[in-house]
Image 1 (tube, one colour):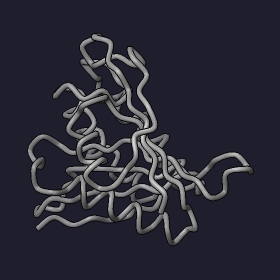
Image 2 (spheres, rainbow, N blue to C red):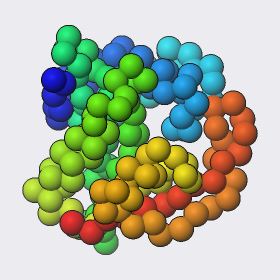
Image 3 (cartoon, rainbow, N blue to C red):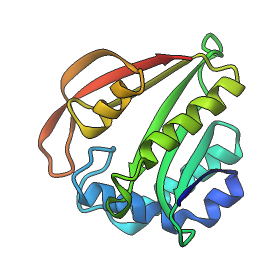
Image 4 (cartoon, rainbow, N blue to C red):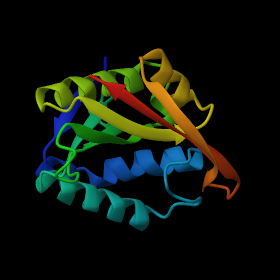
Length: 172
């Protein structure tokens, strides 16, 4: 059984390679998560180094799923560094699950762990975006997230095809 962990900045920095592997796999699998295919390992690692720095600075929290071998197979971030007039809010970012670990409930477990931690921090409004009609959108809706709206041709899929993005929120 895999486990869900919250990493501190040093732990995240030490595991940049594993996190990059998950990101690259998701992009190679067609996930629109901010990167185009093919995603170079150096670019993926640079992204995760910035995330680790943000975790160390207290700007975000990073949750990971580990497989039975102790390797990272999923991630999810809670961005808490927001404007002064939004101390009650946080952004959910980079829900990633390696293709080898999908359909095991990891995304749901990551999200439930993040939501519980957000409650502990007094964050009562969470916001995220995802590709309209994606597996992720169905998960969010099943877990009580409300769709606020869609923006056509908002982003590109890793192969360059435009896609619609749906924005969701959840009140905790």
